[in-house]
Amino acid sequence: MEQAMDMPTRPVAAMPAVFRRHDAATLRAALRRMVLVRRFEENAEQAYMRGLIHGTMHLSIGQEASAIGATLPLLDTDYITSTHRGHGHCIGKGADPKRMFAEFFGKETGYCRGRGGSMHIADVSRGNLGANGIVGGGLPIAVGAALSVKKQRRNSVVMCFFGDGANNEGAFHESLNFASIWKLPVIFVCENNRYGMSMSVERSTAVAHIAQRAIAYDIPGVTVDGNSFVDVLDASETAVERARKGEGPTLIECETYRLRGHSKSDRNRYRTREEIDDWSARDPIGRLEHELQQYGLLDAAAIAAIRDEVEAEIAAGLEFAQQSPAPSRDELTRYVYAPDGASAATGTTHATPPTENAR
Ligand SMILES: Cc1ncc(C[n+]2csc(CCOP(=O)(O)OP(=O)(O)O)c2C)c(N)n1
Ligand SMILES: [Mg+2]
Image (cartoon, rainbow, N blue to C red; front, top):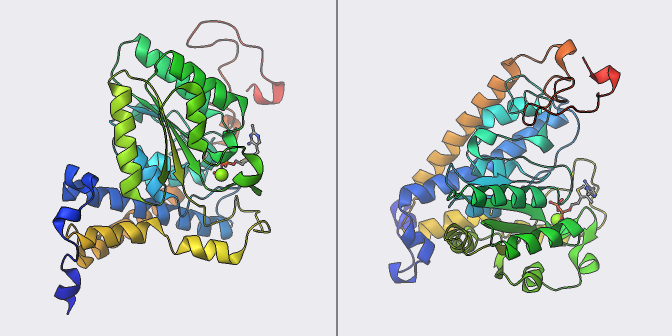
């Protein structure tokens, strides 16, 4: 009986092109990353509820196909800019959950030595130029990074994540225009999860599809099912290839949904239970598992093994974070402000930071 359930149920001829382009090991690794993002966030949420993590956090539960499908074609030498809802982007760019948990717990071993927290995880050594608490803040940074890549004649690309809430901001329009006129290697990935806090896209946005905005900047714009790993990966590969060939930017709109509230203080008053249930039924992880099984690329035992591996990795990450040292009190503002008086990059003088922070 079990064997029969594991038999492929769809003809190989019907297999999506991205499943042909990647071997089973790569697809398994992608699914593993999606499960890792989900379990990372569920565990972070629990730690928050238990009072172990302070501040707030924005969970991307339900959006994993968008983060992992988009980042899969990226190389270590490529870059991303992320958002306040960026845990999936970080893991997609190769971040270690141990150091992410440590950052959440405010520990020295975190990516920003515990000074950044959930919304400011960055790892420049792996091309993660940072999450960003400013809506739309990553867009001009991505364009600047892409300009520098182009000037240096390097072959890297920059993937810029942002939400639907950013698409009506000036920074979005200026960034797309600059990237287009200079043919910069940027992939703009809009994660349209239907809401900016409690504001629906229907109420905030004049166009039916955010990808239509690309027309104004004469670049390709494509809307994909953001809960389909296959569709997101397909669009991302096309856009990354175009950027790498020097043909310029693309705007990808991933239509998706955040199953949790905007942040930990959201009481979900602007949407219905039915809507949330409807999107829960389109869960991107279950969907990819099902598709991989349908084409005989992964069986139930392999999926169970992925879940076990991820549980072990999460447990080790939490343990590492809890055991790591906290910063000492008199060093709390170190790494937050530039050293008194000087900028390492330019040698110029900064305004003196507020005295209570100047130590
Ligand atoms: C420039 C700016 N304006 C407003 C805010 C407050 N704010 C934080 S998140 C958010 C909504 C963002 O929505 P969206 O871009 O769709 O991302 P999502 O939260 O849905 O992932 C707002 C308005 C902010 N952080 N920065
Ligand atoms: Mg949104």
